[in-house]
Every structure is written in C-alpha cells, then in structure tokens.
Image (tube, rainbow, N blue to C red; front, top):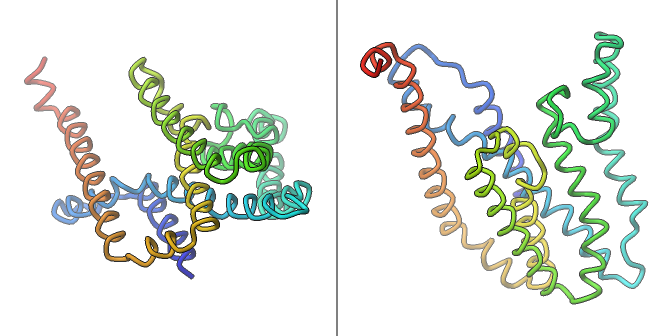
Length: 252
C-alpha cells in the first residue's frame, strides 16, 4: 500500500510537470509554479522505487542455495513491459508506414535514450531496461564475492560516480538532454533504490526504524522539495524576465 502511494505520487509529479498550463490568473500561476518546478523528480522517484523492488528480487533470490533464475527474471520483466510497448510500436508503424522505422528501431534495440528520432517519452524505459540487464549480471557475482556489505559499498560508489559524471558533463557544456536521458547520468537513483533493498533484507530492524520515523522522513522530504521548488521557481522567473521585451531593450 505504501509503495502504491509512492508510485501514485511519482505519477502525479510527472503529470504536473508535463501538463502544466497557465491558468491566466497571475496569483494562481505564481502559487502553482513551485509545484510545477519539482515535477521532474517524479522520474527519479520512479527509478528509486524500481531499484528497490527489482533489487530486492535479485538480492533475495541470489542469496538462496538455488541462486537467481535469470530466465524467469527476464521473462517477468518482458511480460510486464513489452506487450504494451509492442502495441504502441505497431501503431506507429501502422500510422506512419516505412517513415516510422527510424523512430521504432532505437526502441527495439533499447537505445532510444541515445536517439533523437525515437519517441522522447520512452527514454526512461531504456534506462530501466539497461538497469535490469546490468543488475542481473553484476549483483549476484558481487554478492557471492564479498557479501551484502561489499555490494552496498559498490552501490555507494556508483551513486557518487554518477553524480560526479553529471557535474563533469555540466562543466564541459554537455547538452542537458543527455544528462536527462542517458543511462550513466541516471544510475544514482537506481543504485539508491537497490541500497534500500539491501538494507531492508540484511538490516530489517534499521530499515523498519527509519521507515517508521514518518515525521522525520516527511520533514526531510518537505525540506528537499522546498529547496528544489525555490531553485526551479528562480530559474523560471529569470528565464521569463530574460525573454521580456523590457529586459531585451534595456540590454540591447
């Protein structure tokens, strides 16, 4: 039930971000702008949730005598994601004919987050699929080699490396769309979800204590949202001012 609330919150945030429409009332638009400004974190929330759910499956099965059944894992993922996806791609081909193939091929190859031809809203699916593939191949051997603490250290390293990679990409002027879509820049939220799953499995008392501190968690989440909302609103106001005729005349 709690995870459904998290999933619903993520969906709502994404919808608010993509379908924000000015109401034409300055006061209401100004009041809603901080909400719209943080809608993008809904995808990150999805990634954390995916990392937690998938990571818990992989780590739990990998720690059993039989080990992880990779074929069953991939069958479940395919059964969950591909039917709707292939109906969508078939519809694209039906409506667009051969001209739609440049948009379809990257999705079939699961590299749509590196293509400008593929439907832009499918980029996160590519990140998820890359995560499934790497997690299944990498997590069980790491767990056998050094145990869950070793896996957790690797996950923290991945989180820090992903953040450092984003900062380096920004410093050299990489396109912001690459930072949003491409897999290496989005691994920290997925790794954090797997780290949560490892904690829930191997230190359940700690996980339960943190999860039970709802007021503290809510306060931290509220503070984070407030900071992101303020930053997003400031950027929005600065962009709006820079586009205004008065600003352009004053700096021409």
